[in-house]
Image (cartoon, rainbow, N blue to C red):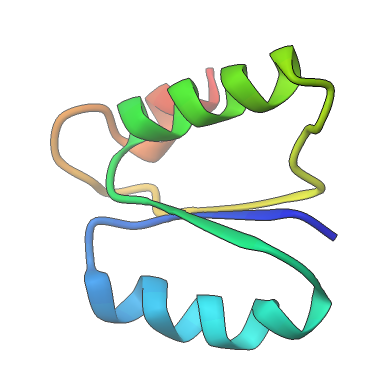
Length: 68
């Protein structure tokens, strides 16, 4: 299972990475804009994410905006 963890808090990303890593690769993103770019690249490469954990309250592009 390929996962993407999106959070502006480093500690939260590390905790989720540790929990999810037993199920497969985990990619980190620090904001919504980075997440949108990573999801687009993964789709273009034919390797989409199976799970995306998104923080909803982030500076710049927040989680709700990124989901849209």
